[in-house]
Amino acid sequence: MAEKFIRLSDSIYEYLVSHSVRETDALAQLRAETATHPQARMQIAPDQGQFMALLVRLMGAKKALEVGVFTGYSSLSVALALPPDGKLIACDVSEDYTAIARRYWQLAGVADKIDLHIAPALETLDHLLQERQAETFDFAFIDADKGSYQHYYDRALQLVRPGGLIAIDNVLWSGRVADPTDQDKITNTLRAFNQKLAADDRVSLSLVSIGDGLTLALKKG
Ligand code: CA
Image (cartoon, rainbow, N blue to C red; front, side, top):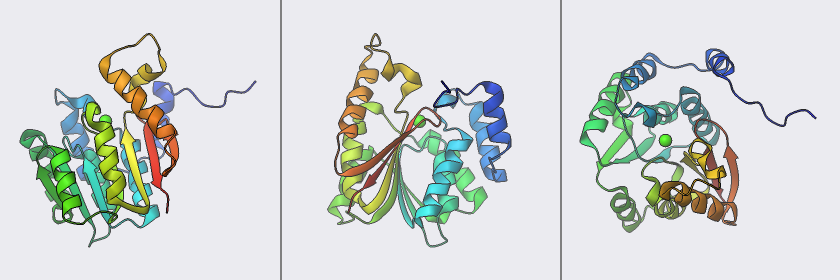
C-alpha cells in the first residue's frame, strides 16, 4: 500500500527548501545570525515562515498577533506579508532576543508595522481585551512557553475575528506527543492541549506536519 505521507529526509527537505523558499536578504541574514545563537532551535524553519506568510496573504490579513518573538524570523515573515498599513502586535519577555529582531525589522523596512510589547504575554493579551480589541485580529501565531499555550489560545480565540486564523507551533514536539512512554511535563501539557483542540467546536482545524507541527485553528463565524 502506498504511504499516505512522505517521510522527509535531509535531502528531500533540502530539495523542498531549494525549490520553494524565497527568502528576502533580511530573512536570510536573520536566519544565518540566529543559527549561531545558543537557542537556535527556537527559530522556525524557513519553509514554515513562508507558509505562514502565504496564509497571511491568502486571508488578506491586516492585523496580526504574535506570542513569542525570539529573534524575529516569524514576525518578519508575517510583517513582510502584511499590507503597508498592516499591524503586528508582537509579545515577548526578552529584551535580548528581540533586540536582534528589531535590527532586522529595521533592515527590512517593516519596523513601523510592528508593535513590540516586552511583558508577560498574558498581560499584553488581557490588556488588548480590556482595550476592546476582541475580534479585531485576522491572524495569530502562538510560539512561546508551552505551559501557557492553553491560556494564550483562549485569549487569541477572543482576539481574532470570526474567520480569523490561529497558528500554534511545536504541537508535535519532535514526535514526543505520540510516544505514550514519554511522560515529561511539557509533553503531557502539549498532549492535553492537542486533545482539547481536537474537540473544540469553535474552530475548524488542521494539524500540519511542517516544522515541529503547526496547528491551524480557524475561528467559526
Ligand atoms: Ca517554535
